[in-house]
Image 1 (cartoon, rainbow, N blue to C red):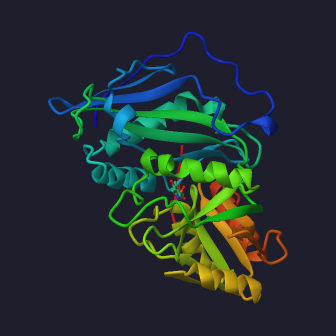
Image 2: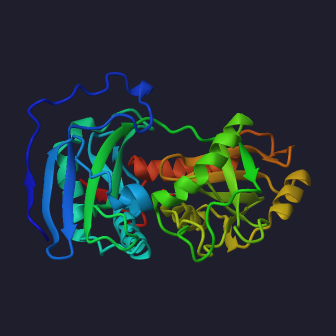
Length: 352
Ligand SMILES: *Cc1c(COP(=O)(O)O)cnc(C)c1O
């Protein structure tokens, strides 16, 4: 592990006063963690410094060819004031898989995780207190070569920034089923947590918003017949006491929330299945009432119940359009463990 130096800010910012009004991802703490990479030196110069813009050459590879990856996790404050993380080692494991797919060097997971813990220690007062609020952690790795040629870069920057966030309300929304644009194809970068996937999604998101839909449901890139995932969440369908989610097929992001929901299902007496899910079946089953609930699952929004799907101008309302009992139960279980009001049976929590 590399040594980590700390330079404290001399001008701390004012912390948000009203936790009920926290926006999502627009406020940042006083410090950030940085670490440089070069082919010659490997990872070096791990440091915590005051949060500030950093200089980038206009020819910087990441700006032109999107060689970038990121992670997203949260630091939660328990009722007793103590801080904890949920499955953070899994985020660093996924960062390493994303780096490999994007032709980037292997992250120094040990140093980066230690950097995150030291940064959180320094910024602990920034973790909000209200239930539902948290400190969002955004590890990011970008290619820094100043060259327009397309090839794997020699220089990279890894950094972590922190943002106090309120509850992210992605739930009980209409979802636009996108049958023209696709997010990812098998063999592409859909499995990697990279900005490139989001770049491909922005136009569809904008058009969906114009049609009154808060989210987009992506179909598979080849046949556009099978369901993949929703924006920054994986998708689940509930049939009575069975949960169904699309199997990880190479173009779906393997969500940690998704994995947690699959593991909880058993404890909650639900059956869970990962399979290829045809959109036609989903729409038919909403109409015949056998599909009773649908929800998105992701770190930011936790469990986001789906009100309805809009497909080719038709609205398919799920159940009564309100939060279903299994969605609620899964939300309560997940957030209970994350905020420390339920026992951590799976050993998923890191106490700080
Ligand atoms: C991050 C992300 C998810 C959710 O993953 P979690 O680990 O549960 O936060 C789902 N889909 C995409 C495209 C993502 O980027």
